[in-house]
Length: 127
Image (cartoon, rainbow, N blue to C red):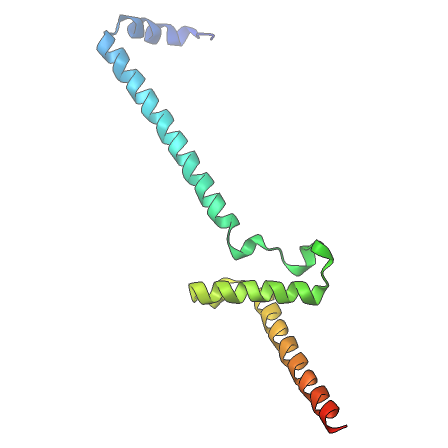
């Protein structure tokens, strides 16, 4: 460590300081270090908790084809996950607009399919 000329006086006074003062300085330094570690741990915990939330799921235009699902199937899965979470938190406004759109689309799809099935079943029973 290089010492500038201005710092030499401070270094001399440090060497002349009593053992008690040196111990106090060490304590202060260790407390500062532990505070920094604690802050870092808090930030990590916050990041981990954020990862588990709904915005870990990417919007549809950023998604990759996972498990070779079709877009409609992925939308259904996402909508179901979102609806579960919104029921748990009872805060449906927490998600962005695209999330609500997909949830609504998935609900409409399931309604359409159920009505189509019922019409087909009626035709089969009459013929």
